[in-house]
Length: 162
Image 1 (cartoon, helix red, strand yellow):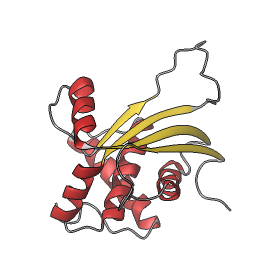
Image 2: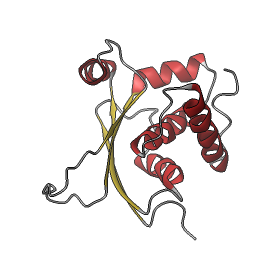
Image 3: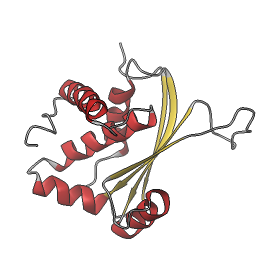
């Protein structure tokens, strides 16, 4: 039995040198784990960016003038909107991961870099599905879900030291 959605299209774009950054295959595996049992079909894009682009996106979309680790942009397709050529529904959205921030956090938290990328990819994918952490209850539910998904990938609890 395959893991994840029945049909999953994950496009990964690297706007920074790829050295040390996980492969597209890894990102797809992590997204599939996050979506497993939650959605049957999905198209999404992941873009790995540098600090400058990460900061600009965070400032423009969230009003926060710093680069953050992951940004999630859920697709908001109005009914009747014609999709661009080659795009199939359901279009889930986009994730943007800021490579220097992810690397810095992994080092500060003494976590393997790939594990931190996996956590942030799972976290971002759950945001695309509508999960949030705006209050304590939502945060606890989302963190528990992340722990379970990551455990299934043999990745340690990312919240263990918090």
